[in-house]
Image 1 (tube, one colour):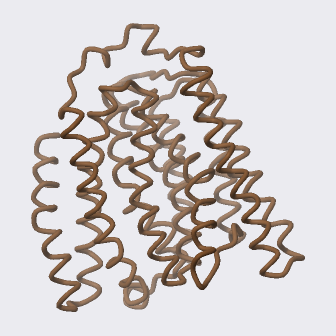
Image 2: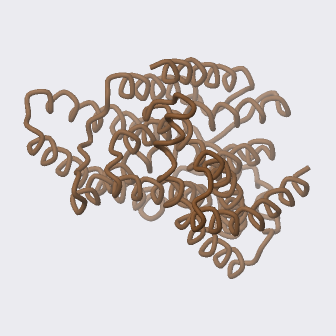
Length: 357
């Protein structure tokens, strides 16, 4: 099954990349090119996912989860930078919202559901789950709600200053969190799979370290090129399908931008490697909230239109709800298919809401 899917993605990359170049140079229909760009980015993301999975086998579950999250988010970061340059602030904020919802509800939900269909109970590191819960509360609830509340009585310039200050604090704390997990407290809270002599130690990586890094570099470069073209199609596609900028950002850009980690997390859960699956889903959310979002705020300072870290009320409420639901479900360190179905149901409810807004 996996072999067939890999062949399909390879075929899509071979066709999609030249078509993307030709379509943007020859000005083909923007609606058609939107579909081509999305499929090309998703298939390139699949290659990035396979490369990071090989690196994960070589470097262990924590570094592996971090790599998956980082390169999964690299796609969205690239799309967002081009959207910022075009002044599409609403789409960028919406895509950040979509990433948080997508990772916590869709990716974690599908991982728990698919893994739960194969195994009755799946366990993951309860210490990591509790550590991540605190960071989720801070990264999403504290850091996103505070600017919303305080900016109500502020001018635009003051809101940008507030957002810049909060962004710098978020990035520093995120780097401190990585230092805590990977350096000062590495191995202090041992993984379940490590304690049980997990089979990931005996698994062979699909590609060597050099090949995996080369594939990553080439895929990222190709994604950067296609993403720039994709951003130019948003306005036409929105008018054609009757989609709002909010819906395009929250659902479409978020799913396309995070395709790599979506696939990786589900595959890991199916293989009963829940530590890596949870690290991808939750770790990616933390990276979006505490690193990608603040970095985009700082990058926007160099563009004509600056982006404050101020979300709309529906965006804020859905993110806070997703965080609280994920914490309640994951804090016991084990999961099953029904908990996955619960997260997916929450995602569908929010998706319907954003579509109708």
